[in-house]
Image: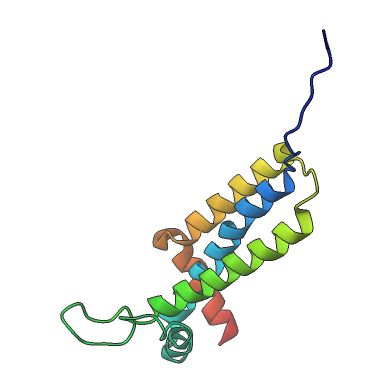
Length: 134
């Protein structure tokens, strides 16, 4: 009788898990930043919108209206998400990264981006930055 347990399944590295969770987190940040920037300036609103004019419905005035600069915000977030996923997956696909260390970082990043979308929390910060830059 053979007591040796054979494991023919391929090893799965944790680097791909970190890459797959970091990428959408990074995609949320340009979504949040472009949202606030477009609220502060009509110039930047149009500039951000230019990235999403390829999306059907981003320009129009029919019964459903127009999504406006939201299309550009989503396009930029999509570019960052998919681009960072491709890069990090390629770099970390054969590495074992500590998921125990990654979980608090991921949770903190998710909390930060969530607070960035809560206007009563982030608006004073945005207005302060606007005043400092003017």
